[in-house]
Image 1: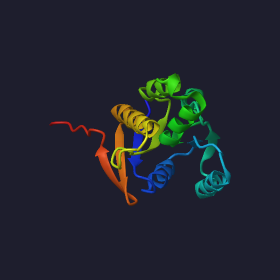
Image 2 (image 1 turned 90 degrees about the horizontal axis):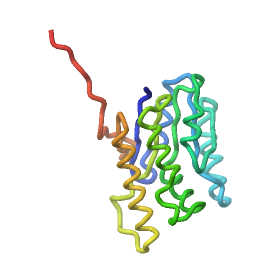
Image 3 (image 1 turned 90 degrees about the vertical axis):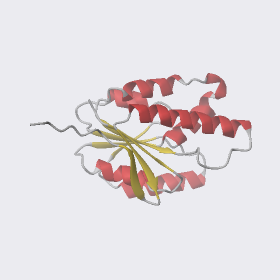
Image 4 (image 1 turned 180 degrees about the horizontal axis):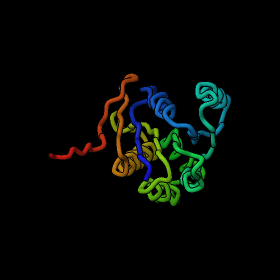
Length: 180
């Protein structure tokens, strides 16, 4: 069974950079990108991130159903970095609407994280430490993102909170010792 790592923190806290370093330990890592090109600024941002990743990762773009990619993973993939859950949630809201809640795609991802086919790291923004959004949709998004983060954290082997580029382990695997 694969290890699951949730990497969370605020905007520009170093989450993606840290996730990319995790992939350096593997011979066949996949970067599962959830972002979609919605405007010129986003296109530039995506190109910049592709350049930063270099050739180490095989990039797969999947804005709506990352579980499908994990289900298709075979022995040729030993690590998948999903970046990022909050962008993915925004995609689901945009394409399916709030009325489609609870999202089947979200339930599928949570299910596969219980027994992933390879090691998986997921990047997600921590939205609950800031101001309360001023409108209903913003509050709904914050609440659902917070619940998603909790649901992933429950399934995760480890949870890392990024602060100014520094990882702080919130949840670590339990190390077993034997008694003589």
